[in-house]
Image 1 (cartoon, rainbow, N blue to C red):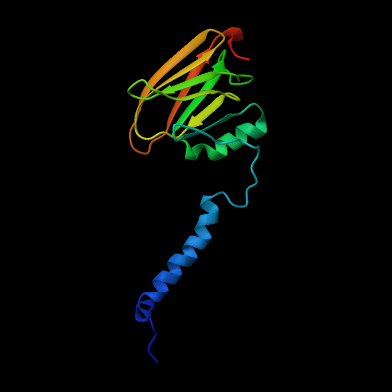
Image 2 (cartoon, rainbow, N blue to C red):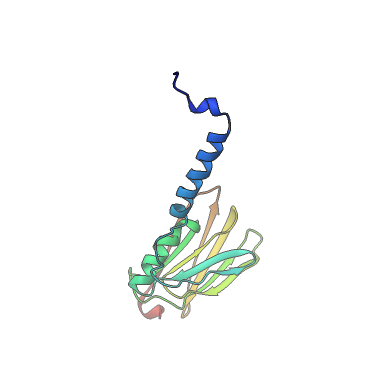
Length: 154
């Protein structure tokens, strides 16, 4: 008897293989089996989702775990360290200067997922304002540090 290849069965094995592969890979891609380290709430303004946090170790781990969903990642530091930085007022503006996000960060990390374009981020705490303008083109990740001095962050 001649061995039979998968090609002999036509499209059925290919469909079956694709279905099985998607069942095996989808839970891994979604992080199934991993309990969240902390409850990080997803917010949305102007159709743009954003998250913030990182006040403690559990929140830092969770922010790291979900970072791949947010191509724009802001980190706030005081005297070079993110520890204890929260309450930073974040304003995100589009190329026209329209405010698309206005929020207060719950910790030293603020991530958002805008469409491609030119974005200006203002971070302000106790009178100190730091601004950055960047072009997000395609599917790349941009990590920006905003440094504050002294007692400027809560």
